[in-house]
Image (cartoon, rainbow, N blue to C red; front, side):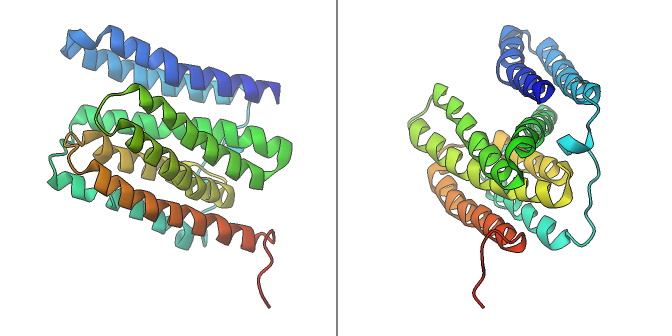
Length: 238
């Protein structure tokens, strides 16, 4: 338990504090900044995996192939999420190699932290059902950090992001619980962010994000309720 708490705190601190500080420091160096960003992202991922390796529990953190047999009906619908971002490609989204690398980094780190560390921390103490709920809510609330940004609709968009991050978190956490792996959540998370990060045209964000929020909340709720029924936590009508 203690080692898991330490891992969670260290990885979250590196992701939310150290990496942004380094990127901000080298932001004016252009080409050098890109190289340093890529290097730091790689080091952060390697350090996190080494930290998990040190506690000798890759499987416990979901860092494994998992049991995907017979789970494709659960896994494949996840790819609806990145498909929902496709309209941004027709609205000026500029998918560059750096954007792609950043999205992969974010996907790996956020899944390691929330579906890996936080999920395991709660699962070990209170069980997987509470782990699904708590890790999903924590994942949503962490997006409140985006209130530090700027823009006409920053508060509204941030609140929307919190809600659909919770919903995505439910779907990802259910897949994590059923397969024992964060592999597919990492892949889908990265695909969602690749286009989302590349979007520079904020004109229709409120409309699209509002629609996405409704769909993803419904999506995450269906995933979680179905999981609770299958595991006997919700009684179905005879």
